Image 1 (cartoon, one colour):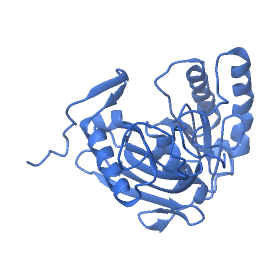
Image 2: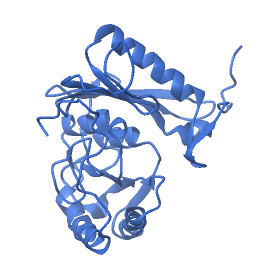
Image 3: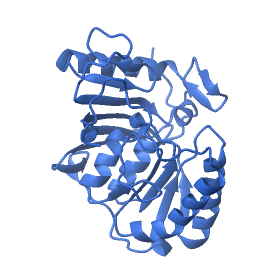
Image 4: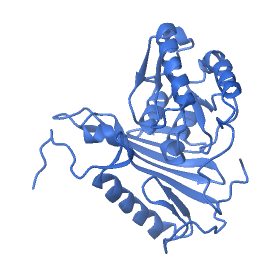
Amino acid sequence: RSTPLHSTPLRLQSKSGAADIVTQTDKKTEETIISFIQSHYPEHMILGEEGGVITSSSGGAAAGDGSEFLWCIDPLDGTTNFAHSFPSFGVSVGLLHQGVPVAGSVVEFTGGPYCWNTRSFAAGLGLGATCNGERCSVSATDSVQNALLVTGFGYDHDAAWEQNMRFFQHFTHVSRGVRRLGAASVDLCQVALGLTESYHEFYLKPWDVCAGILMVREAGGRVTTLDGRDYSVFDKSMLASNGRVHEEMMRHIEPRVAELQEEHAGLDLQSKWFIPQGYDVKKL
């Protein structure tokens, strides 16, 4: 049976709250991707948004196997957008070697009802980034004043979330605009494609960013934490940019993040998270 182009997905389920949802599409897509990876790389570990950690093709819970390779899968990044047929969502698959992104692919669904299309992004470490097979690069914009910025807001409305609300207001005043689109992997790819100049957010997960940060780096951009440290997919804050506006962005952001951590002693933005038990991250 054909599906109308304006239809919305069925069988929605809530995870942590009303805004944090999962669909049957999320689950089935992840199962398909995992099956493919296991058939080709049975010794690799897998970290999926819906299924958690798989250490081998035999499945099961995390039980350290010392693998140097970890696949990070977001089967449907931007599930809420997908559930409303809003065109900012995608499928993201990235590969880490000892914690360093070495390969990634993101398929972005664009257009909307009656005009759906896709953009397919791919990147390899040292090989550059492509969109629909053509090399892509970050923009040449060199000032925040002339930049279009993107951010995102997680489901936990804590002090970091409140600070990012203040960042949203601040950057609306000093840039050409700030957008919140709702799919981290897509947001990163749009920086890599030169459509936007930067993207920042707190509390992103490895499956959100593994492929996307490689796109940005291979397209000539830069990625750090919001307090200026080298970024890994296991960090809790991120600023990705075209590189040319990065230092100026940091001058706006870094002092506020330092104040945030001083004012809220229990707020931990420094430690790593979501490192699977047994995964070899010696390069971090």
